[in-house]
Length: 235
Image (cartoon, rainbow, N blue to C red; front, side):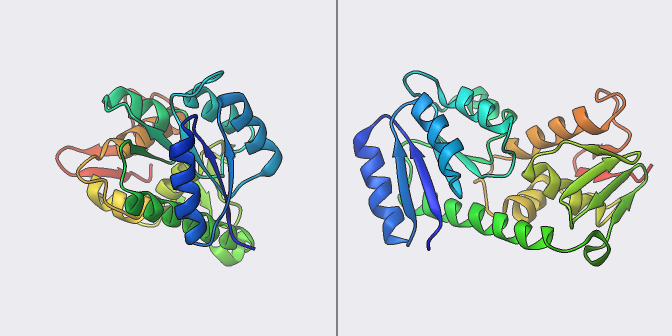
């Protein structure tokens, strides 16, 4: 059985274009045409990925994303937005979306991002089947990453992180003290080029600092190298 995609968009022509192209790629497709219906179907049908429009009747996409992330932090969510303002893209990422595509979008690009997000989830699911011992704990000072459980701990206490945040910490913890540029992080964590838009990295780092640092305004664990990028200090 193919992977199941839920498309939530109030424009029937957009839904049909996506349905046609996704089915050609071998995906099963479900559709919802407003926010409440999209939230209900996402919870009931447990799709493998959600394509979620921002401008929806009844409940906007931001609210739907926020509600879903209260109980499901793993299902990939790609926001579809006609808004080009940076604050709207950032808001989606802050609420837990994995990616965004601005309308009008290239179907080819969107399909590539669907494949990338689903494949990343498959890899993480495979790793979660391994024990912490076999997967190998990663330690960076007060931070411990358990790949087998897909868990991040600070001072021995589990920190609630999203899938993307986990992947980011895992990469940094595997090379403590190594500075990764935003472009490198996009390539290795997001797995594709954002065409120069590295804001997704900054948003993820800011969210992580709020969860990991004693004082996010003065980070000592997840640090910035000016002009270089980000690294875990190992303190």
